[in-house]
Amino acid sequence: MLMNSNKVIIYAQDSFGGESAKTGIGFIRYGLCETVGIVDRQLAGKTASDVVNDLPKIPIFDSVEAAKKHRADADVLLVGIAPPGGKLPQEWISDIKTAIKLNLNIVNGLHDFLENILALKELASKQKVFIWDVRKYRGDLLVANAKLLDLPMQVVLTVGTDAAVGKMTVSLELAKAARKNKFSAEFVATGQTGMMISGDGIPIDAIIGDFMAGAIEQQLVKVSKKKCDFAFVEGQGSILHPAWSGVTLALYHGSLPHKLILCHKAGNKYLRNTKVEIESFNQFVKIYETVSLPLRKAKVAGIALNTLGLTNDQANDAIKKAEDETGLVADDVVRNCGEKLFCALR
Image 1 (cartoon, one colour):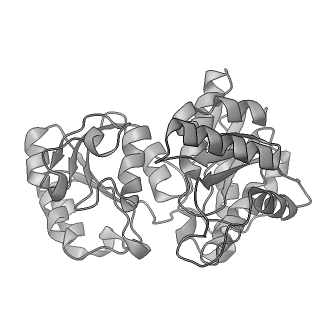
Image 2: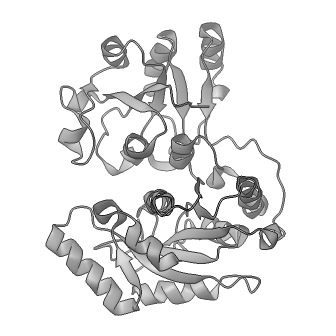
């Protein structure tokens, strides 16, 4: 639904820079079109780089109207925050109505679909703008049956010790490293942020359980028609997380990866929102390798660390500790690029 020519305003009211704004931050870093403004009344007057160091100097405004006034060529409002449970706060509806009246198309990654709100749907139709509910799955509901065994491309899946540790970012950086090394590579999105960035993919957590593995299989069959050397699949959740392990396993078995990259947020000791302890890297390496299907036994090729918030010395110490523990290559792809981990995959 998005094109290179679009100009995007990120809607991140009261949240930009926080963990819930990872959709907006990820889009700014990797999106296929330009972000020209951000809406967050608490940070109005600042720029994105004032809030997150490695972002460009995109201005932040207190309202949709102010952002649109600053950039009259803006044509998309992208909901860049993900509240708990992906629910739409009622107070956002008036801002979305305002955006539509200003002829902004709407990109929404929440579980609550804006198309289901009649007033918004009718207004969008009147203004001749689109609403893209990214998590609305529009593919066929099919079960997986190991079709990928016959395809020549190398499939690499990012897996995690936990949710929200950077699996999407790692997949994107590995695809970038592959292209730099003269290989053709595709990023395969499985969540709303990745789909907004790439303009394609599947919303795995919005698909009925029986058909999740089939959905990623279908997507990879489609990707294989591009004759790429590598397909980097964005992982979700964690195999040991009581909330999200089902999605993790469906992606794993449906994508039949050749190799895995294990992702971890440096310093994390417990699974998100639980009392479940993260014991060691080797614990996760063993489990992920054990549960791969006999049809294609996958191996962990490296450890991708998210060292956000650490000094360079602390980050280097964490990387060395991971390598010493596992005997595998480790690195932070944001701090150091994906070259080292891509070489490990090869």
